[in-house]
Image 1 (cartoon, rainbow, N blue to C red):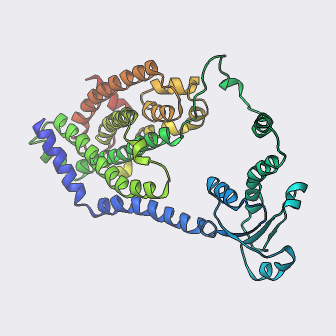
Image 2 (tube, rainbow, N blue to C red):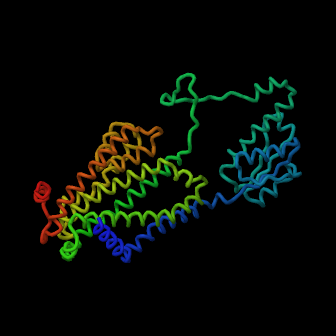
Length: 408
């Protein structure tokens, strides 16, 4: 184990000093922030403008209207005015994003409140002004001198409550308030980023093993450590490099998300569910790293990789091929079967647990057991392949030769 840690430290130092690795380390988060900033820059142009609303209040309800506007988060600057309807023509022609509302007893009795707007005004103003109908209706009802019981009946109104068949609850059960979707999305996205980053970094093991063969460095290294120690050191070293990439990415992206999203992102992130999702991501890395290091040892040069090696490199992305069925029906047969297949299990489990309301603990337990057993199996097989393949020069190993090494 001591020699494995030495190999891991050597791999970390070698890559940390590599200019291309350093550039990629910071370029990815900077590009994400750059695109996010440009999107907010172009998308927030209309949001920064507020509408000036002048109200000629003859009903003494200006305070009520202002409270309603605040309640609905209307971006309005509400001001009183004494101008009459026949005096606002010049004001409308000379201003932008301005409206005049005339609250008179006659208008209230007729049920039609006159509203005058400039030519340039918020496109959603017509819909927003309708939100003030409720408080004005209350004022109108109060003027009828009805009893308290009559006022209560009229104020309650009638609404239609729709319930889909899948959401139907038996009589006597209490409905559960819908939670913020970010509660589940944030841990899932976090684990997905970790899985993707460390798996992509783990692919560098593939390149590292074949490069050391090409440059004949492997013989020198194996004079000091065993093939098993070299393989384990590479897996640990590139895992640490992947975590470094994730840490740098999150150091840039999380503060930006906290500022831009009006939600407690960090509160959603630091929950027990995140630990399980991260564990699945780490197990996924160990599985694919074992495969990569073994297959990398069968190649004499990265530029001469055959179809067999190319297909193996696609294994981590198999879960993306079934992303549609998994997200549309996370409890369906496709999602369940894919959870038990080692190559798709990490990605599918993270996707399923992100969208499911109730986690199927038995299915999760079985999937984790299958994944752990698969890791031990592929580690053992990779060790056999690596032991022979790392010292083979001149050509890529064929699937038949690889099978012989495994059986030996």
